[in-house]
Amino acid sequence: MPSTYTDNGGIELPADGEQSAVWGDTVNINMNIIDRLTNGVGSISLSGTTHTLTVTDGVVSPGQFKVLVLGGSPSGTNTITINPNTGQHLYVVKNASGQTATFTQGSGSNVSVINGTSKIICSDGAGSGAAVTDLTAAVDLAALIVGGVTVTSTAAELNILDGVISTAAELNLVDGSVAGSIVNSKAVVYSGAGQVNATTLAIAGAAITSSAVELNKLTGVTATSAQINNTASSTSNIQTQLNTKALAANPSLSGNITITGGTQSWLVVASGTELIFKYNGTSVMKVDGSGNITAKGNVTAFGSI
Image 1 (cartoon, rainbow, N blue to C red):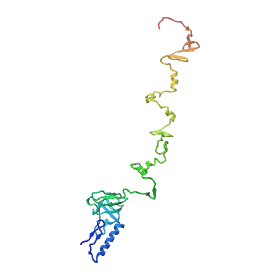
Image 2 (image 1 turned 30 degrees about the vertical axis):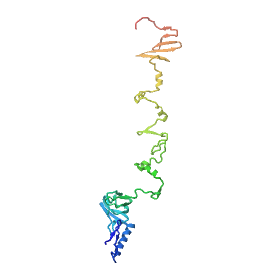
Image 3 (image 1 turned 90 degrees about the horizontal axis):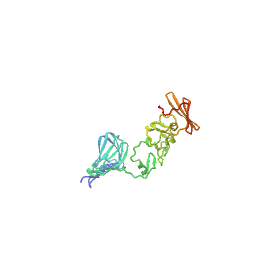
Image 4 (image 1 turned 180 degrees about the horizontal axis):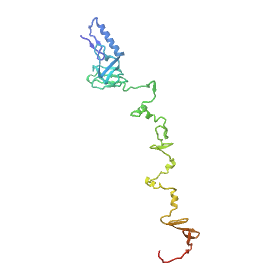
């Protein structure tokens, strides 16, 4: 009866009564296979874009290594096929090949090991539908240490970064920011009341020199810019100017009234109980409080003007 072989490691199992006096060679080979399966570290040189990792029955072969150190000069992502597809294997993979290495065994799932990283993988040996699984894809750790520093953040706190695409420089804008205040070169964070306390304000590079009190005068203003521009040519207080002008209806006047036309000038002066009319500075007529009229010249009635 011929020898048989173990399904995963290819270790030879001599039949009863076989290999009399020569079985020592088989035992030595088997011991080497076992040693490789348990502790072997093998350098696997990759080239091109494909590679076959084979376990050969009864022979010390590359697929029996426990640890695979990938090297060589692959021309792109290299697909490594674990052969045969009926063998179950556990590999520690270190990829130093310069390219991504993808492990496959059948039509099931594959595992890619990016250059410069390491993974622990296993193949299920399920034949044509065999799958390769990444055992390091989900590891439950009591503690995480990176570069000798213990990570104290909880998983929930670390998960806050899920989906964040900001750069380190962008995230650092938050460092030193104060809610409700503007800190130079830092992100602006609104206060709980939605306020920001700024020392200066600029729009499109132009500094706003108005104070908050002055800006608040615009509260409630509904005038358009065109309407506000109507005051652009004013040279003094508008109300003061209006006070010196006669009203369109029922005017109430104070002080002297000057009426000019051409080179002539009339002046109406209220003096005590009298209203005096002056022509070019000379008093020519007056009306007193009783309605009496005194004229320096003749008074014509029913004449034409």
